Length: 181
Image (cartoon, rainbow, N blue to C red; front, side):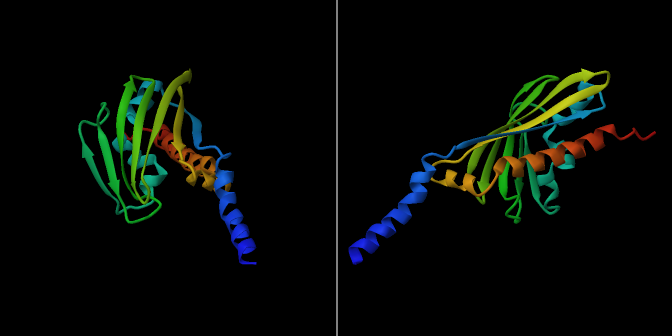
């Protein structure tokens, strides 16, 4: 009887680990918006990491978040770091890895707490009409085996996508606001 119990228990414990072998480990999220401003104005705004504090959902989640900066904003190597007691914000930093003027900024996100991960992110700008710019904000991630099992229970693409879209919606409002005289 004990032997059967141990076999059943071993099977129950093994099922999630076996399942995780067949679940994806990577995800990609991208959201898009069109902003009624010329590409140079939009790009000049989004290339500054400090400006993300004005439109990123994550920056608004903790008004008491500690922010520190290293380097010259809007240049390769600039780092924006944050520390928050809010577990949805946590501790981490973002570094500008490359810039294609007027077109693309690539970042490296380094999450330190409540979990550790290093993931790439980017923003692109493209002219789509007279004084209209398409902005794409993308993020990709990876979860090692067996943590990738979480993909069965959480839709990271939808969760992160909603946050990216909220940020882009806020960015559109900011950049389309009439200038103050």
